[in-house]
Length: 274
Image 1 (cartoon, rainbow, N blue to C red):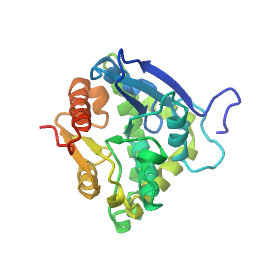
Image 2 (image 1 turned 180 degrees about the vertical axis):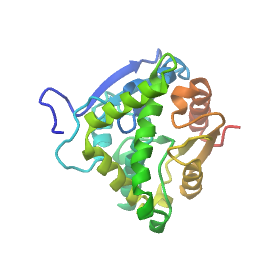
Image 3 (image 1 turned 90 degrees about the vertical axis):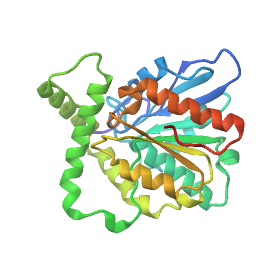
Image 4 (image 1 turned 180 degrees about the horizontal axis):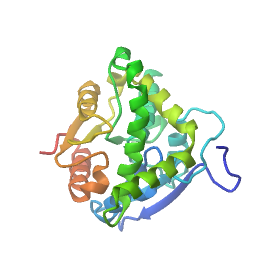
């Protein structure tokens, strides 16, 4: 599907301001999702945290296919357009791959993301990452499409105020994927396939990885392995939680973010939340 003339590929919105000079965070949603995936977290946000959200080209009902460019550049543009800059970027699902790519490529170029991008920390929620190219197989490609459908259903249910009938949820998910079109599905797979080649060990920016223990879409083991590879990372595994911790367990997720931010303010290495 081609980009609609009236649709902006990137839309930024301030979700809440801090009464005092605090930490400013940018929220990035996953494939076929939207800014609303962060609504519950915004309601339970840590005190003193100013939040901005980005409506990205791969959002549900968004701009859809756009001219080819470095996908991670959308994050760079979003950060640059926020008044006063951003301290922390909190990314979910597909956006974690792009943020990780941006940070790793910046580090590989001998640049510090703190100076180049103005980012001093990151939170990766339900990340996709594999350590070796051979960890991908041809046989799993059809299953990848099934996972995208499941992810769309998961996101729809997480954003709903009430339980949805499974058939209705499946129908809504299928309609959402049809609207999204194949462009971003292919782009997601391309970015995912590149993850084994990212020099993530060179990323020394403080990173907190959050995984849902019952995530059926982004395997929790991938987040655990990624945290071990990063140069300055911590891991938080949330029990009883699937692919969208910020919507399923917003208070628990907010606590994880708050404690991570506390370690940054204190100048201490990040530690995992128990």
